[in-house]
Amino acid sequence: MTRRPLGRGLGALIEDSLEENGLAAAGGYREISVDAIVPSPYQPRRQFDPERIAQLAEAVAAQGIIEPLIVRSLNHNGNGEQYELVAGERRLRAARQAGLGKVPVIVRELDDKGALEVALVENLAREDLNAVEEARGLQRLARDFSLSHEQIAQRIGKSRPYVSNTMRLLDLPEPILAQIERGELSAGQARPLLGLASAADQLAAARQVTANRLSARGAEQIAAARRKPAAPAATKSADPHLQALIDSLQRALKRKVRVERQGKGPGRLEIEFYNDDDLTALAAILASQHQSAASWPQP
Image (cartoon, rainbow, N blue to C red):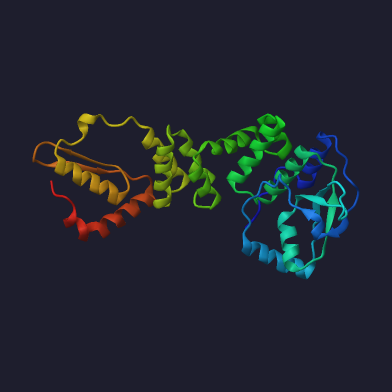
């Protein structure tokens, strides 16, 4: 898969982060024991694909670590000096899995804000973060270090609207955020759900998007349909048998169904669909349901 680079180089963005924090970078790199490196509390990534780590470990075993890790020094203790990982956790995990005793590192004099900025920049440049991890990292910059969205955008090489839109994802219910983290929903599919008034509506729309494998455009159409004013109560069928049939159809098809009918004469049945793919899926559902139609309640 082709990676899309940031507008500026990773090294330039990291150096900008150092300079803006008034921090000096140590020259060159050194090799240190993997046991001397501890995880960072500012690591924005939560998901690590074991298969990709294993593939990287094979490459590391054959070629070693090509790009040094970035660390910052911690206080000395009785066991010698320790370092906190700032950037390169996948490489560190792969090195340990490959059995390497030492890894090349660049030691930076970083404060907490600088450590988080560098970790975010590296992960964004490699596209290693899912949208929720990215949003939480950006939120932490805003909350813990009192940075505006404009300031964050300048530090990570993105636009202010990109920062704001990414952080807004965190307004969605936790079950939807979990779906994004698991890769079941993309940010593009989830973002239209922010326009819905309640968490219940958002969750129902998310289930509809995943059940029908809809695109981001399909998610927009579902959100738009759910934002429409509810039909007046008078339009609900007074015939309990007909309403039972409507309810059964809606459960089976997972979409809104409307029936217009005067008395016992002819009427009209309307079934919503959201795009061409959804129409094809709906046709397949109707065909498969044909044999079981006799089991539906009769008006």
